[in-house]
Amino acid sequence: MRLRLPERPLANRSIAVRLAVSALFWSGVILVGAGAVLVALYRDATERGFDGRLLVHATTLGSQVATGREALVAGDPLFELPFSGFYWQVGAPGASLREIDTSRSLVGATLPWLDGPQAELGTVRTGYVAGPDGRSLRAVERTLAAGEGARFTVLVAAPADEIAADVRRFALALAATFAALGLLLGLSTLLQIRFGLRPLARLRAAVVAIRRGEAETVSGDYPHDIAPLAGEINLLIGSNRDILERARTQVGNLAHALKTPLSVLVNEARTGGGPLADVVESEAETMRRQIGYYLDRARAAAQVGTLGTVTPVAPVAASLMRAFAKIHAGKRLDLALEAPEEARFRGEKQDLEEMLGNLLDNAAKWARSRVVLRAEASGDVERPRLLLIVEDDGPGVPADRRAEMVERGKRLDESVPGSGLGLSIVADLAALYRGSLTLGESAMGGLSATLDLPGDVG
Image 1 (cartoon, rainbow, N blue to C red):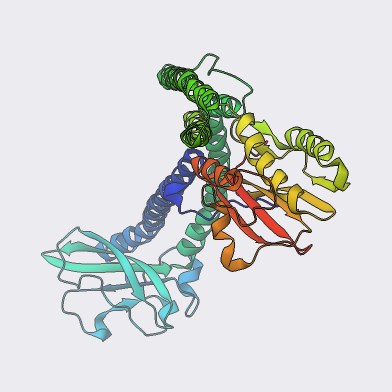
Image 2 (image 1 turned 180 degrees about the vertical axis):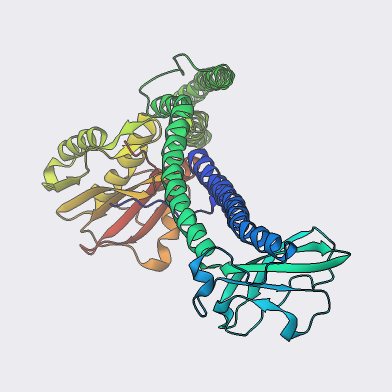
């Protein structure tokens, strides 16, 4: 049977998954944030370098105006090409459009001032303006003195495409670098988590070995922060075994204490004879049977949940099938067993024999010619279950009377020998293991009994 892990939210997933998701998430946030800051810093540095080149032209034009030169030249042929994107203009405070000198590339048009011609003397201002063709321009503006209190403002602009392209190339290179760095960080994080959680994996494997009966205690060296947990697990296992041993001792003492008085009563009743003696003998036998039943139940209750107790199903079932084949040899029953080797019951072997023995005994008594026992895996990896199904080809039981079969001491047909406690014992034992017994109709026409018990993944 295919086992599937249930879908779970992140909060309930393993520590490794939570650490990995958390580390990768915050690494991504940090890398994206750092990338944004670096791109902003690079943009600022690129703009400053670009402004420095424009300021050289602004200073050259300012010196030409200050010396009274009539034909201003910026020193770059691009300022001469119409609408090349490289522009300059010089104007005095409050000057009209006709009084503003511009580069030939503007073809008579003007650019908006950054701070207006009334800006503070000597101040260098930078910013973005729209060119005559709508292109975005990076501009540098400076107000200078022209002698005798006169002032003028020089503005030099160039296309901002160069800045954007340079920043874009840097951002792409940075993104590729950070992506590779993020991948390496993710791999290193996964390796660190795997290395850091390895002691927990060893501790889990040790506990699983105890649950499967392959070890008795948690052994091995563990880090200082996990070693106390391993010690507490060993103490818990030891305490559990001590409690179980005391319970078994008390059950045994009680059994011995009651057997002798009951034997005396039965012997005295048989010796005395008479109606009263018959009643005493009958009731004493009933008491002995009931005491045996409840002592067995108490023993099973003490053993349920014992760590490290796992019983393979196939050997137990095969042994029982051979025994019942001999017991019912006169009927020549076909006893079929379908139990995979990996089918395992998480409980005591004696309890499994008790449950399967009662079911097989009931099936063999009522079967005409065939009894089938199947073992199947159920549940999931975390909570494995074991299904044990016993079917026969007998007369079966009506659906409305199946519940009566598991009542203590209830028998539907007195013609077949038995105490009537078999199925009730099975149901009680299954309940002690947090399992259940379900009766239904067999595919062969008889009764089908299904035991749902705790299993082991093996």
